[in-house]
Length: 121
Image (cartoon, rainbow, N blue to C red; front, side, top):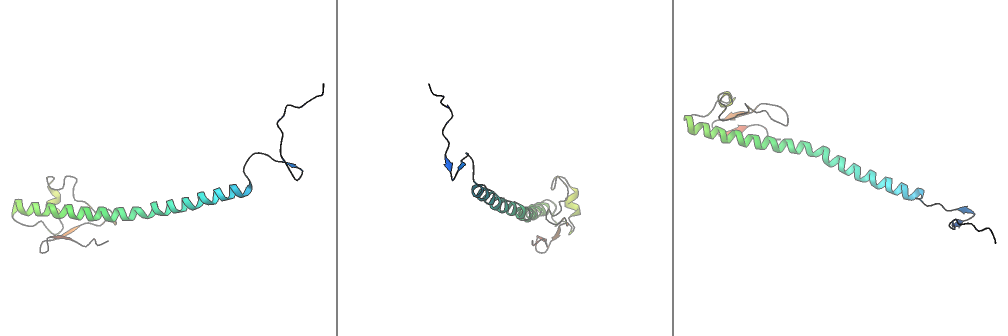
């Protein structure tokens, strides 16, 4: 009986045994795609924070204006322009007088227009 090998046959390509795996170009293409996707994701998430802070400032302005109208209804006068009186009463602003989440500045109230002034981000 002849001595036969039990190994699986391998493909030869120009005298070199072919090995299973990925070629250099396949790996290069995959790394390039991952890089492109990561750049897109990083830029989208890094710029979204500023927009969220601007929206939070807008919502805070609206909350202060509503509480100022409530103050007027309850007391008959508008709150002080620096909102110190409404900020001291926890029934109107339970967490205290808020600051702008975008730039950290304080809010002021204009009683003639009945709106929070500034903060046009």
